[in-house]
Length: 271
Image (cartoon, rainbow, N blue to C red; front, side):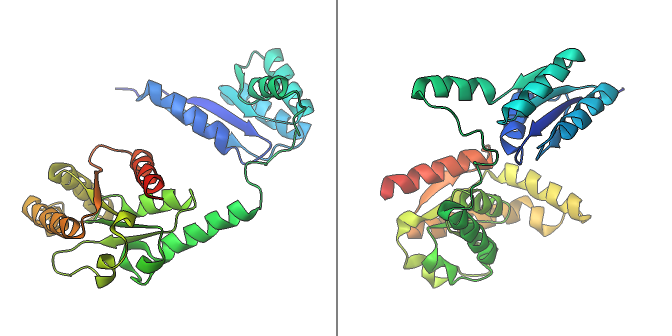
C-alpha cells in the first residue's frame, strides 16, 4: 500500500520560528495520521530570504505559515503568495492589529522579543542546567536545592518532565526508585509538598520498556521489561511514595505537557 506524500508547511519567521511551528503541529494533530512535513525558515530578515522560501514552495509545493512582525517583509510574502497562488496564513498580523486597536498603541515591530536576554531568560538557563546535573539520581545533593523532586521507576517520563518544567523556570531533581536500592535519606527531610510521585499502569510500562529495548537493539524478553519485575518495581515505588505522603500523578495516558500542568498547578497551590 502506497503511503501518501506529506503536505509541506513552511513556517517563516524573522525570529526562531517556534511559535509558528507549535501552532502548525497542534493543527496537524487534528489530521493524524495524515503526514504533514514542517519546514522551518527562521531568521528571515530580507527580501532575498522571502524569495528563497517562495521559490522552494513553487518547486516542491506546500503552504506557508508566517510570524513576521516587520511590515515590509510580511507584505512582500503575502504579495508573492497571492501572485503564485500559494496558500498562506498570517499568524501574528491579525492579533497584533487587534491588540493595537484595543490598546490604542502602535506595536514595536521588533523580531525575537519572545526570547529576550533578561533575568527571566537566565533563570530558565539555570533551571535547565540544574535539571541536567541532578537528572536520574546522578547527584542526590540536588534534592535539598530543588523546587520540585520527581520520584518514579524507570520510564515514567522523569527526565523529559524535568526538562519541560525547567523551561518553566523550576529547578527539578528526579530520583529513580529501584527495589535493590533504598532512596536517599534526603527525600524524607524535604517538605513532602515539593515531592511528586509518578505512577504508571504496568501494562503500559511494559510496552514502553519493550520499545526501549528494541531501540537499543536488545532482547525484548529482558528482565527490564518482564511484567512481574515491573509489578515488583511499582509496588516498591508505591511503598516509598506512601511513606513520604507525597502527591502522586498517574502518567499512564498523559503527555508530558499534561503532567507538567498538573505539577505546576500543585506547586502554585502550596506556595
